[in-house]
View 1: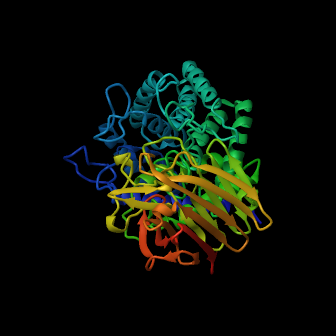
View 2: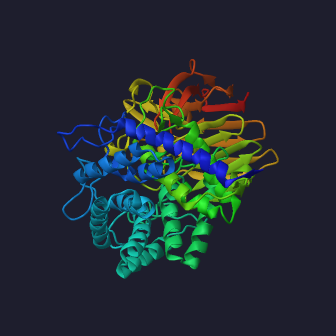
View 3: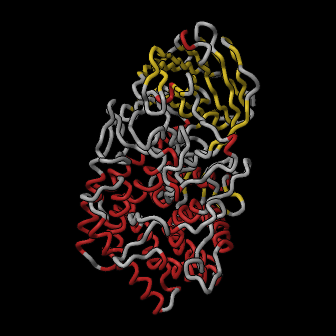
Length: 578
C-alpha cells in the first residue's frame, strides 16, 4: 500500500488547522492588560504558558494554507504578547514565575521558521520587529547556551539547530561554528545500542549499574534527534546526516506498533504522554524528510501522527489517551508545541511513501539494553519491557526494581504503562494536577508492603538483579530485588523474586517475598482497559479490582491486589480476551 504526498498533506493539514482553531479560540482579548491580551489561556493549568508565543509559526503556516486572515491576526497578537516573556538581554523566560531562560532556543527556532517560510505575510515594519527579537535571541543563545554551560543534552541539540538556522539567516559564521561544536558534542553521547544519552546532569554520568541518562521515548524522539537532523540538513553535513540516520534507526525500535513512543524507562518519564513528551515538539519534522529516502521513517511519522488524531479532543492534543474519559482538562502546551512539528513537516513537503512494517511489528524475541538495564521481550502479539534502570533523576521518577514498565498486546494496546512511579510536580509549570486525586494512583505493577507507617516496594529497588533466557515457550526474565522505601533504603530481610514468562497466548507472573512479610505484602497490578483477563493460580485476589487513573502516560486502569500465600508466593496469568 502506498500513501501519496497529497493524501498525507491533506490529513496533516486538517489536524494542524483543527489545533490552530482551538488556539485561536483560547486567545485572550484584554486591551487594557498587555500581560493577558493575545496570550493563549490553558484550560488545564488556568494560566497562560510562557512558551505559547512559539505558536506564531503554526498560526502563520495555517494562514498560508487557508488564506484565512484570522490566523495571521492571531499570530501578530501572540507575537506582541510574547514581549511579556522577553528579557533585556534578548532571552525569553519559561513563564511569568520562572527564571529559566534556556527555552529561548525553542522560541528562536519557531520565530525563525515563521519568518523564513511565511515572513512575506507580514508588513515590512512587522517583519523588522520580528527579526529584531530573533536577533536578540540569537545573541543570547550564542553566549549562554554552549557546551560549557550546564543543560540537558536536548538543549545543546536544539541550539545546534538554532545556531545553524540563525547563522544562515543573519550570515553569521560564528553562529555556524558554534552549531558545529554543539552537534559534535551531542554525537559523542551515543550508548552501546546506538541511543543518544545526556538527559541528566552531568550529561555523561553513569549510574551505579553503569546506566546512562536516556529519555529514550521522550526527549530523544521528540526534541534531540529532530533538532540534530535539522542541523545536518541546514548545514549539508553528509557525515552528520549518516550518523543521525543511524541514531534514528536505533530509536525506531522504541516506537510501538500503534505509533506510541515507549518512554516507560526514560529519565524524564514524568512527562510521558504515550504519544511522546508533554513539552517537546514531536518527531514529524525529521521523520517525514527522512522518509523521502527510506519509507520506514515516514511510516513511523505517520503512525505517530495517527495517534495524535486519536488523542485530539475538543481541538486540543490530550496529555494521554484517557484524559477525556477520566474528566481531565486538556493542557494547551502539547498542542502549541506539536503544532510546530506539523507545520515544519508541511513546509518541508511530505513524501510519497510505502506503508511498511516498523521494527516493533517483527521485533527480536529478547533484547537487552545494558545502558538502561532493561530487557525487551516479544512473543506473538505481546511486547514487554522489564526495568532495572537505576539512573537517579528526581526521586522515584521511573520504574525500576525488575518491574514491568510496559506491557502491550496487538489486540488490546497497552495493558501496563508506567510513567512517573510516584507522581509529583517536578516541573510545576509543565505538569498537571490530578482532577480526582482520590483515584490517582501509581501505575507500576509491584510487590508492596506497609510496615508500621512506612510503605515499601520492590519497584524502588535500584540494586535489583535481572537475568533472562529464551525458552521453548517464549522469553523469560527473572528479577531478584528487595522491598525498599521511596529513597531506595531496603527493608531488612525482605528479599523478593519475580519471574515473567511470556508465551504466545499469555503472560505468567510468578513471585515470592520473604515469608516474614507474607501477611503484609501484596502484588499490585494496575491493568489498563477491559480486554485482559487475570487468573490468580496461587495466592488470592484481595477484593474486587478498583478503578484508578494516572496522568503519566494518561490511562484509566483497574488495580488488582493479589495476596501471596503463607509462604509469600503467588502466581497469575494475564490473557487477552478480545
